[in-house]
Structures are given as structure tokens and as C-alpha cells.
Image 1 (cartoon, helix red, strand yellow):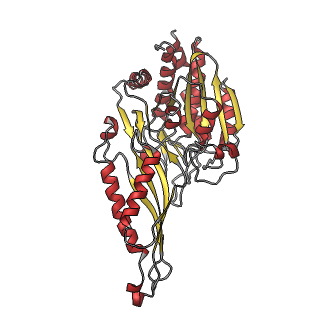
Image 2 (image 1 turned 90 degrees about the vertical axis):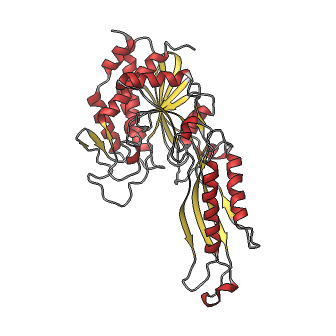
Image 3 (image 1 turned 30 degrees about the vertical axis):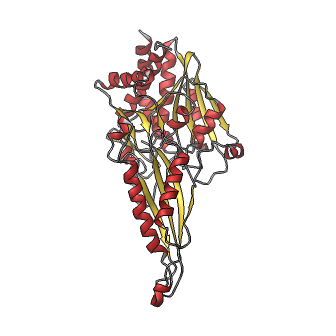
Length: 409
């Protein structure tokens, strides 16, 4: 049996489904990932991989000039690597285990149920993306049946949802990779470009006055309305002439959204303060500093009225845009591996969100994302993943890893 066939035969789809369900049953909100990482470390050892559960130096990471930002409270940052020793090349399969809050709406089975029904695994993290991390572990273990093989390191990381500190920390610890694949939910397309994203907080000041004499004051809300219109115009300008061909295919490649607004203290008073939080999309190839400056200039121009200026703070996650050239050999290798597994052509695509892919490309490591469908169910009530697709992604990862040994250097 040839190495690829041997590795594919070694993959146990039933065990993959059971282990993915077990991972979903362990709550792992961003900031509290250690229990699921401990469980996955035990799984890696049972699969014959070399597991290394470790705590990162959080204080040192927060002082690092490249610190990618955080939003969730955190007292510690844990990571897990699971290694299959082998020859060159040295490949990374990366995925995050932190998940967002399940919200207040009721779930049919509960967010941590790990229920399997009608071929789907249900629960928070089923599609984004604890099940895919388990698939990567099983794929790496199956490659072990191939005899001669490349070295594979599975990184199970924390803190992706609020900025990507987990992957940043892992690559500070070990970045000696020839290529990386992240099985995020991509609709079975191969993603080789993603937008950047910057979170910001703004305060628009006004001057309070009694409602009966409102003209003697200056409404912060009225001033914010001008800011909102200016931000919408900025979004239109950024998306008017999109350079990257894959990003150009998207309906809105670089969204700019204000997601929270708060202001005013009393119905009979002119509001003297409006706060707003938002997210700025950053084009592929753009500089984060220039993107910040463009938004700040837009807000300042909208409020050029002689009143006090707005304050803009850049808090939370800072996702730089990223790209692996579509004609890179690793892109072609992964695309062919998925196409052969699925029995059909596989699209290349760009996506309008930030991702951990950027941490690899920033270090010159070619990286793509390719995973199951179901992105629309991520962060939603009744999140689930198709187990047949999950198995297909694991098999495609096996194909890509095995074929990387024969790929030209």
C-alpha cells in the first residue's frame, strides 16, 4: 500500500466523531481554555503523538511590540502542541479551541451537549472550530501509518476569537515551519487571502443644556450622526477599487461597522457624550497604521465645527490582513488534495474577516485555510458541523501532508 493510501486507511472516522463530541462538551470560552487543552493533550498521547501542554509568559507577550491585542479577561494563556516526528518538510496544522459565549437564546440541545444527530455534531465549537482541531490530531496520527513522512506539528491554541494571541505566542516559541494549514470553516474552499480588522472605541463630546433651551447646548448625538455618515462614506471609498482579485469577488470585502452606541443621561437634557465601538476592515496589502490614521482623519473632518474633537482609541484585537499568493505551490498542493478528496474542483477565495493565518504569513510561512462549510452557524445558536465533511477535511489534510514530502522545495 502506498503511503497516502496507508494513512487514509488509518483514519478512524467513528473515533474522530466521538473525540470531537467530547471536546465540544468541555466549555472553553475565550480566557478559559485550559480544561479542553488538557483533554486534547490526553487525546494526542493516546493517538501516539508527542503532546506538550504549556503556559506562555503572558506578561512578556503583553509587552511585546507585536502583541495582537486582547478583549476577553485572561489570567493565563495555555497552548498545546502535538508532534508527529518525521523528516522534512516541517508542517503545521493550526486551530483554535476558544469559543464565543453561547448567548441568551435557548439551544435545542444545549451549547455543551456534543449531541450527534442526523450526521451532525451539535454544540458551541462544533464548526468554529474544536471539532476541526480534533480532526487535525487524527489526521496527524494517521500520517504516522505512512512510514516515511514529513514532520507534523498540530497547534491547539487559545485566544483566537479576541485577537490571535495564542497563535502569536506559539510562533514566538517555534516558527520553524515550511507551511501551515488552518482548518477554519471555509465552505470547503481554499482561502489564501483575508482582510484585516481593527477594533476601535470613540467618544463624541457635546455640551449639555436643558431640553427647553437646547439651542444653547450642542448635542453629541447630532454630532455623532455626522460621524456615522462619514464612516459609511469611508467604507464606500475603501471598497470602491479593490486591488486583490480574490477579495474583489466578495460583495463587501472590507466592512466598517459600528456595533455599539451609547449616549445621553436624561430625556430632558441635551446629550453631552456619545460613545461608539466599531470594527474597521483593512485591505489586503494595507498598513494598519495608515488604516487607523484614515479613520481618525475621517472622524476629525466630520466634526470640524469648532466644538471639542472626538477621541478615538484602538482597543482589542488588531488583525492584520494576510495573503499567500494564489500561485504558490503550497496553495496548489492543498487545493489538489481537497479536490481529490471531494471529487470535484475546489475554489480559491478570499474572506472579509481577520484570522490567525496572518501570524504565519507575517513570518514568511505560506499558509492557507480550508475546512468545512457552516461559517454562518459559527457564533450562532444551535451551532453544528456535518461529520461527513469533517472526515473529508481530515482526509484532505492527510493527503496534503503526505504529498508535501514529494513537493519541490
